[in-house]
Length: 337
Ligand code: NAD
Ligand code: UFG
Image 1 (cartoon, rainbow, N blue to C red):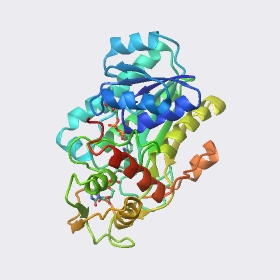
Image 2 (image 1 turned 120 degrees about the horizontal axis):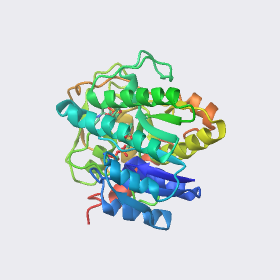
Image 3 (image 1 turned 135 degrees about the vertical axis):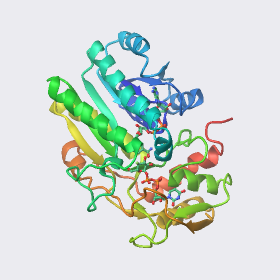
Image 4 (image 1 turned 90 degrees about the horizontal axis):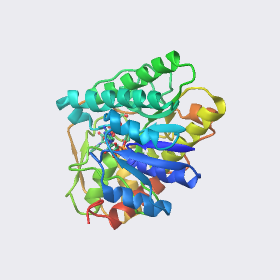
């Protein structure tokens, strides 16, 4: 199939591009490079063994999107393109509404004009907010507590309405839990600009000497050791799920909303310990106050994805830490030379 990956130069889209190319699909990457780089696109080509077709454009640019879709018939779009920093979304909600919701509407319109009727959308466990119980199933109550989360929920709802209105439109909402790790080559990985918001890239930067210590946000949560518990999932397992979800849309001709996680909760201190073992580096940390908007414990019930897609996460926390460290130690400044 010819598949367009919007936001495909980024962390998760890039890993998905590699997996899709390995499965024999023709991949075209569309990205405005607002949170990625031409160097990352080059590296993706190195990993895949040949350069990717790359279109440097914004999904909100209708004329450019029409030209891109007109090149050759497209079988499916995977939509990774979004801004994703929760804190920033609280400061600049309109930027998030414009890029994430406006961008998605523009993309759906361009797909409609081009007659493309399959979509795989990057949603998030953030749509569950502070879940009433764990593990979280897909029918849990949806609630959001910040503008970023709202954009994910709204776009899921827009896609749902479109599926109801357009009989032949098929979509998969993939609710990612906490993606971490990197391709085993060490050539590509997560490259957060500035100070990392998320735990694993922060640990990586401490390990490589870019930051003195990790601040652990809260040691008094009602969890196994008082620190926050999440469902970390290896980005290569996640990437594989995208190929499987697309196969499902084609094979079953039905829409899909699934959790993508391992089903296992891991605390901050457990991840720090696993990373220290994998890297052989000490990770100095200090327990500080809780971060606004955080929750104690979130992990997935991933059984629906297993039932419908035949997919399950295969890589454990050791592999996540090993691969994150291989990437960071070989590229201490991410994609910068
Ligand atoms: P990322 O920032 O690395 O990748 C997103 C890519 O989209 C970037 O390369 C960016 O340049 C591009 N982009 C953004 N707006 C665009 C636009 N208007 N036009 C064209 N390109 C645009 O982020 P990621 O971690 O790879 O996340 C991918 C998707 O998964 C996002 O939608 C994110 O919200 C979602 N998600 C991520 C996580 C996570 O923890 N990383 C968790 C749940 C969901
Ligand atoms: N944490 C720290 N120190 C840090 C960073 C994080 O202790 O420097 C802790 C957090 O308090 C939390 C855990 O590490 O307990 C994981 O935090 P992340 O920021 O890595 O991940 P979150 O689960 O908080 O957030 C992620 C995505 C969001 C998404 C959310 C809900 O980054 O975009 O999952 O699915 F909204």
